[in-house]
Length: 162
Ligand SMILES: [Zn+2]
Image 1 (cartoon, rainbow, N blue to C red):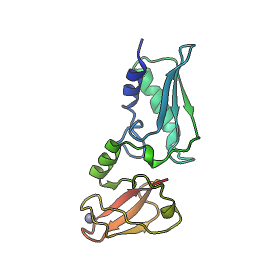
Image 2: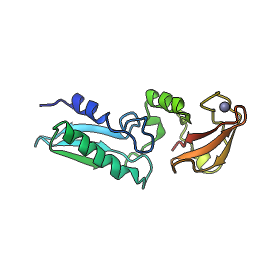
Image 3: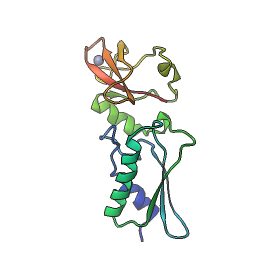
Image 4: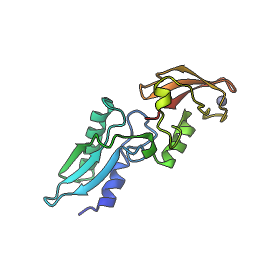
């Protein structure tokens, strides 16, 4: 009989489809793991962005991962409320983003300003300069914006806060 802690650890093997260096637990996508009285494992996930096509992939990956570890039966439950925010990302996740060259979301500030087109200072993940310019609302995926550093002249992705 596996424990809830073990199941959490198994799920950490599931990569975020948008950002493969992060797993879905670090992203804050997995909200809860529980075992019902009937013995079913329920994994509660919250989509990062509404309508994000990655969610179906995450659900399938969680099911596959737990099947590989002989955890059964498993049910993945999508929970839309409360909505996911970048504040749920762990500090480890932010550091990994930085090392990948993606500027992590500014903590504690749901970035409504950016969504409405208001400029804010985004730090370059390479040289930490705040002299950066948004090149495009949409970077390599819809969840990121493309920025350019005016200091080291490198383009980089900024993970949008919601
Ligand atoms: Zn720079």
